[in-house]
Length: 131
Figure 1 (tube, one colour):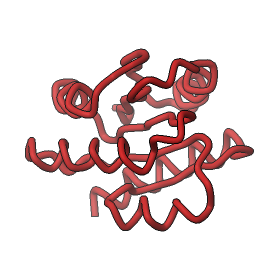
Figure 2 (cartoon, rainbow, N blue to C red):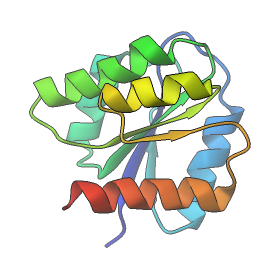
Figure 3 (tube, rainbow, N blue to C red):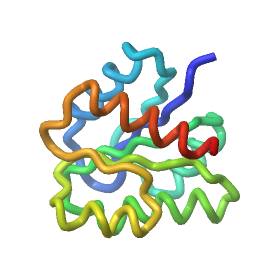
Figure 4 (cartoon, rainbow, N blue to C red):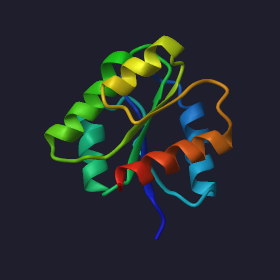
């Protein structure tokens, strides 16, 4: 059975090329990938993650709203009783990575991350979440 990952674009960020590349990278690495599409709310992402029984959530953030929206996804998941790890990738300044982790984000990928780094990050957060 392959691990299931939901990938999403939260907020008003309409740039979806990168998230589609990441979805393909994960699929080619053996993950089952569910892509929710553009302009999702934190509530919708959390609900979809629970409905799809995923092992991790990947958020693609290019809008600069990562410090608000990513922690909201984590919060909504926890409010709904799910302990699903969240990985954020995109234009994330280095100074924000620690703050995101402090807010409950399990992994942060920055521009230039290789396909191998993306796969390793997602596998690592899933493994860590299983204890």
